[in-house]
Amino acid sequence: MLYVSTRGGVPPTTLSDALAAGLAPDGGLYVPESLPQLDPASAPDGDLAETCAWLLAPFFAGDALAAELPTICKEALDFPVPRVALGDDGASLLELFHGPTAAFKDIGARFLAACLARLPRADDRPLTILVATSGDTGAAVAGAFHGRAGFEVVILYPDGRVSPRQAHQLGAFGDNVRAYAVQGSFDQCQQLVKQAFADADLRRQRPLGSANSISLGRLLPQMSYYAHTSLAHWRKTGSTLDFIIPTGNLGNALACLLARESGMPIGQVMLATNANRTLPDWLASGHYSARGSRATLANAMDVGDPSNAERLSWLYPTHEARRAALSADWIDDDEIDESIQRVAEETGVVICPHTACAAALLKRLRESGDTRPWCLVATAHPAKFDSVVEPMIDAKVPVPPALQELLDRPSRALPLMARTLELRHALLKG
Ligand SMILES: *Cc1c(COP(=O)(O)O)cnc(C)c1O
Image 1 (tube, rainbow, N blue to C red):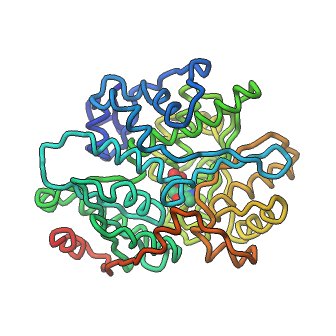
Image 2: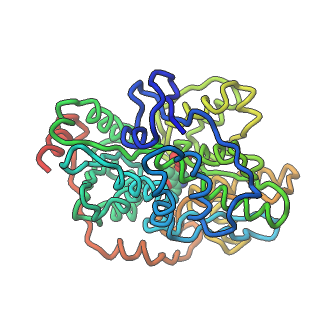
């Protein structure tokens, strides 16, 4: 399988080269030249790592990493991804937050790290993975590369705009991981990272690698939990499974759509955004209009210009095709609050503010008479957002052991002005 750019400006590239590059040289995003058609009946009935190795085999076919794919899957996907009942109306919750940093981004980040660690490099200096984060990406990437020889991680996050526990997590790794609290917004952090990657002189002195949500190495493994969950449902019931997916940069939901278009038994796909409504508005009107991001209670989804929108246009090129393939709706902060309280009261399950957007959409569907067994995707553990969730439910949220371990460590972030020269200086001296 070879990979091309959504903008069509680069020759077909191997998976290894696309993984190493991150962004395509023409500024587009890498996508497979074609999608394989897999037969659900031939899928292994094993654990998530086995499903992933089977699902991604055609995507790795012919690449230098192909022989290592099963090992990469075992190494990266070594925690459970259970689907549990939510209430008694047939709905369920796919819990993607049992990894080391308690959010679904562990899956993509760990898979990417396992791939990059196996790619040969001509340069023997360490590769600095530079990431901007609105909270969860930075911790997942830091966790995935922490202690790996040949890698350093530099994280930029907007000071004061991530949850206190997210901030603690980001600064708690130490060793080959450095966290910078940027005096600015997430968009400014992303801008700084872009400028650093565009600085050829800096990159000669300090080899940079990327791990942001446009990386194929994060996108591809995210298909695996949709495949694994829908296959299990299909074996039991003979039916496809419908998903409601909390969405920001559209990486998680795009992986679900790719899994469906590759033949997995997935039915309807609905995106749930917060008040950053670029995607629902696009699907309604047919006109894409990027906006500045707005701060909401679901901060990991505060994205006004979702980077993977370009891949959605590649997968479904027309307005009609997009409308047939998926739907989307948005949820304001009051509804997030209401949703967390209501789900806790009705089902005893505590959800994070992102997952609450999906739960609020399910409620709208039920009110309009829909009775299908939707699967809601739970993207983070609620304990990561204790300062939002605990006052709403008036109770403590138990902290999972992996998260507690990080919270017990000391945490240190360095301040950074949102200026190109400051970041350049920080990278060169470190
Ligand atoms: C990143 C994140 C999202 C959004 O995922 P995308 O792939 O960017 O759409 C949702 N919830 C949580 C908890 C996240 O960390």
